[in-house]
Amino acid sequence: MRERLAAFGLMGPAIAQSAVGAGLAWTAAVHLLGHPRPFFAPISVLICLGVGLGQRLRRVIELVVGVSLGVGVGDLLVAWIGTGPWQIALVVALAMGVAVLLNGGPLFVAQSGSSAVLVATLLPGAGGGGLDRMLDALTGGLIAVAAVALLPISPFTLAARHASAVLDALSTVLERAADAIERHDADLAAEALAEGRRTQSAIEDFQQALSTSREIALISPLHWHRRARLARYQKAAVPMDHALRNARVLARRTLVSLGEASPPPASLAASMREVSEAALLLQLELAAGRDPALARQALTATAGRQRPERLGFSADVILAQVRSIVVDLMLATGSDSETAGAALAPVEDPGHENRPQG
Image 1 (cartoon, rainbow, N blue to C red):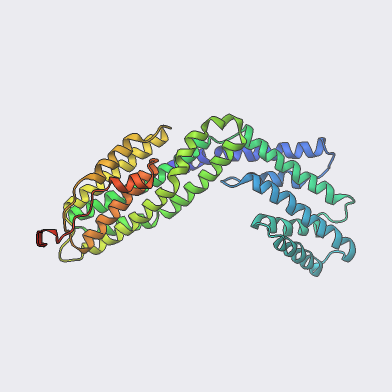
Image 2 (cartoon, rainbow, N blue to C red):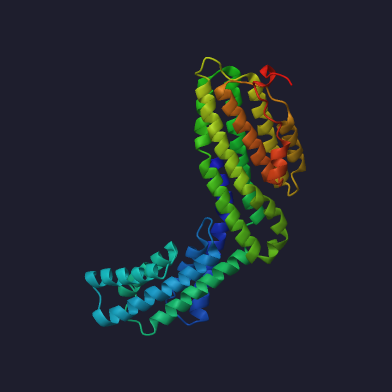
């Protein structure tokens, strides 16, 4: 129940935008444009806003152009060949084919086809209908943009919530892998790997949320002041994705290493926990809207610690992934790649003591 309530809390503002926008679009089309059945006005609001995340400005353009194309093709052909099964098939094929040739997006193509179907079946034969439907679609699209601007979801809260899910997932993978090494427990390592494999959806949701947050901050004057705070998440997005990918490799190698004669030492588990704590510190500082200086310092300290000269093949691979995740998270804090790479302690050559001197 808590998860459902949390999901409703996340989607509630989008639902409110869609409901209010659909009602306003219908009212505007009926009373301002004088259209008795402005079907496309509320529908265009729902398509542009949806009940989730998306690129609404592009949707408005694709919707209006798609409706115009579908209605134009549909009206032209229906007036000439009438309605029926083969006529509908021909109208849809031509409308969607033209949309593809115009290099339209998926919404553009789908809207062209659906508009043509409506013209050929539910709404045929109305004089001047094509222009009216195009105006209805435009009205709904403009109201959708207004709803985003005047009834906005907080873009910073949206980005922060999804970024926190990514960093939580990263921390969980590292902690479970560390537990597996300390306890020499292959089952825990398998859990860490399974958790790592589930993280891709978290990063995809974060990237989509970030896209929507940028759009809201662009459209809504109420949130223009949050652009600088959002910029930190934008800078962190790609390094966070890379950190999760490296964590999956780490978890996979941890599972393999526990079946070998020489399992990785406990010192590796301690390093994983340090990075896990730094990830959570990064999460807190980004959510607070400030420069993640403390996380950067913690990661720099972890990167600079001396490492054992030789751990064994699997343990060396795990260590390499830990070091890669440290660099990824330093980049996520705003460090440049040169600074992040220089912070790493040099890898000792295991054969240096046996080399002849002089």
